[in-house]
Length: 349
Image 1: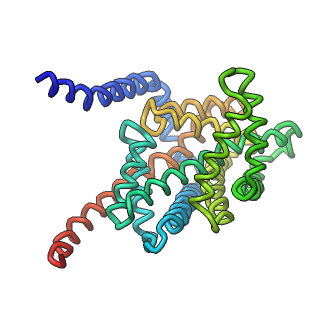
Image 2: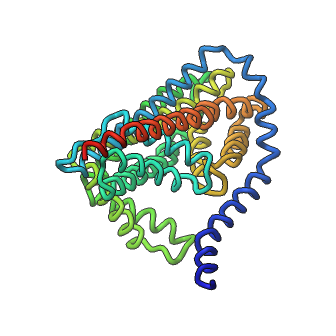
Image 3: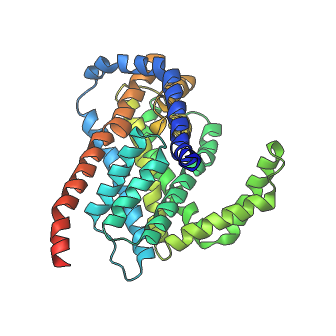
């Protein structure tokens, strides 16, 4: 009985704690969420053509992830035929939806995505390596963005209607990211120098981190990504950059729809912080924390509270809420397909 009880505690204890943390987190952010959704009727004042623009930009961001996944699976698979675009898209959409509605966030989504790919005929080891490499390269791009925006922030504001330059900024950033990404993947010495520089800075606030240990960690992670996309580095860097920049462009479009005037570089910094908040697994997909954090950051860079609230709602509608039903439909379609095809596979065997 003790063993059974201990096993029960081990199995469900962690889940219970996770659910409790999620509940507390949702309770904390409930007022900000109610305030956000209270602005829902204000979306009717926005020109209708902005909605397909945001959907298109987010669709391009998702498509870049599918491309990245196909590159990683093709590299690891060897003689194994990479899965079709439909399988990759279904797995990513279903995993993305799971990460937004289930405790565990990105980890839960990665598990479901991997399960669908494995069911689609991909070896488990190949899927695990590919998913890990995709996570590393997309996170690396996110961490790179603040560094690239520092010069623009220091230079000063561009002309008055500068937000219209946001799409151009995203294109310039994508080019810089691709260049730096390829340099990191093809030139290990570059990664060592960056790691040592970062290590010196981190050592000031955390003595246990040294320049050499930070460089060694970056080199190890770089090796995993380089192996995953060997021979396809340019394409991998372009896909990872496109994933982030199309998503950022959607935020710019959401603010432009409200005729907001803001510096694209400052909006980019707000975007990066919001994406970092989404990685904290307190609530699924950073629900509430991302919305409240992004709204507050937009206000800090000079956008009116009303516009910041509506802009955040419009952006999150396209990037967070809309992909959930799409992902659930993708998962349901996969389940139906699995149910229909399993008997035929059994008969063939």
